[in-house]
Image (cartoon, rainbow, N blue to C red; front, side, top):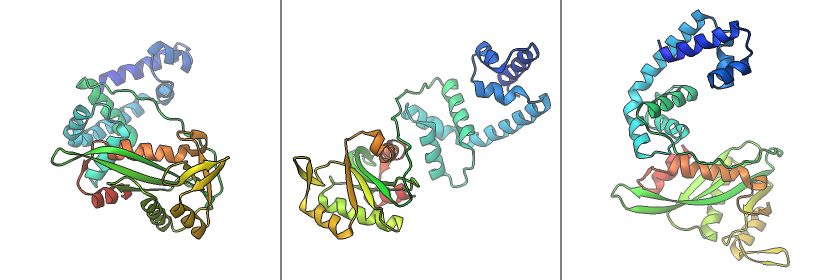
Amino acid sequence: MDLKGWKMFAEIKRFKEMGLNKSQVERKLDINYKTVDKYWNMSHEEYVTLSQKSKSRNKKLERYEDVILDWLREFNDISAAQVNDWIKEKYNDFTIKDRTLRDFIQKLREKHKIPKQVSSRQYEAVSELPMGYQAQVDMGQIWMKRYDGANIKVYCFAMVLSHSRHKFVYWSDKPLTTLTFIDMHHKAFEFFGGMPKEIVYDQDRVLTVSENHGDIIFTEGFEIFRKAVNFKVRFCRGFDPESKGKVEAVVKYVKINFARYRIFKSLATLNDEAIK
């Protein structure tokens, strides 16, 4: 049994018997309120059963300990979410719950003295729109390593349906032009099985050539495409979470959780892995 965990459980019970409330116990033990609440009405027998189950899950996770440690040491700021994605991609039989894996990674960091670098989270708007009405589009770029150690810059196109959050991403090894940008729209519409009524963009050079007294002048290629397929265009400022936060979160995810530290094999492989 985990003696540290048992001691905490016993202390919670002792303070409860003394008449303290949950918030007071939280402050006394300097632990999370959810932890206090979890054990508040749990019997000693239930705690032993839970502890045994936890020990069994940790035994299963020991199989992956070496590879997780390698990732933590090589990529100090890697998140538990990214580790989870990578393990699921590497081992098809991985069935451990997210919370269990996060706790296991935290214990590994503490045991091997690998503190995680902290980065600020980006705000994401959560306003809802009708089904099928709007999609958001954004682009990103990131340097990746090849097997030979050389670097390659890759560019991603991302589209997300605002209501369902269904996502599509496509990579290119060349900067996006109006033609490739249009082609990626076709791929996205095919992937989704349809087209939204409105698409939100940054005002980007692959779409526009200038702004004339407040009116956007599109590049010829994009204007032909827009009129042919007939959807409404709305522009917003870059990094504006109120209007385009959903797709910015997608781009952040594919650049950090998916692409960062991944070895570039080929463009076709990268796109297959991204869709998977």
